[in-house]
Length: 326
Image (tube, rainbow, N blue to C red; front, side):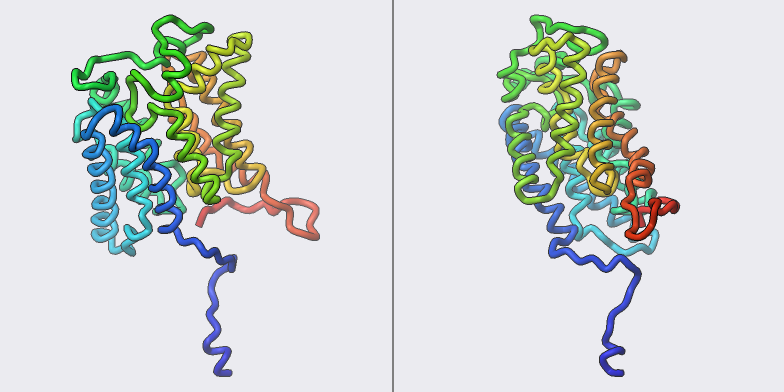
């Protein structure tokens, strides 16, 4: 009887993992060091302020909201730090400081906490905040500048190869510059694809992300741009190495809370995001499309998982239950 009293019980499933949320978020923060270092190298010390402001505002917003609503304080899980760092790296160096603050508050309070908190938010907070800022605060956050002290305004490569174009104009930097991030205007953390790849490799080796999500996302987008351009190699690779594709596929599409959970669902999620990104870039005047593509797939993720939910042993059909992340 004494042993029964010591027995701990709770709601299923009873699955334990040696990793805590805080440890996983720490690994993501370590992986973000690679693009952050490149951003500081290319755009200067202001990037440090942008990242620090994003992280600080995100943590403070989460703490104050949970304090005022009498909820459990969860800032120790470090997920707010990841959101703030992602947002700080998702803006151009010319973005005003208040845009980082507004975006961080929106990401944490509106998207994450109103959605139920970590593990229950339908949409990726950093992606949603980024799209919101671009929709409502342009051109303040879309005034791209080239690296250097003179802050010379510049168009991004996607402005030249998006919207139905099937060839690469002379104004677009070469593939080498696109890969390493030389002489590119754009969001600070997305400049060097080489450094983002190092971050992706770190997360894969540490078993934090499923490699098929970023790989399938990038390959699907690149393949479709090849089909649209009759497999013009330079055009395909310019799209692959331009904009947010690598950054979004590595750090945003792989989010646990807002992505698909089932193995087949992860495949559908990644391919679907790639298809949407290619369609947004090619058929619409809005060239990027990564943010919208990820948000759309975030919204579809519950239905994708319900479709591919594993069949219970001994049953002929998958269980038909209302999908719930809680």
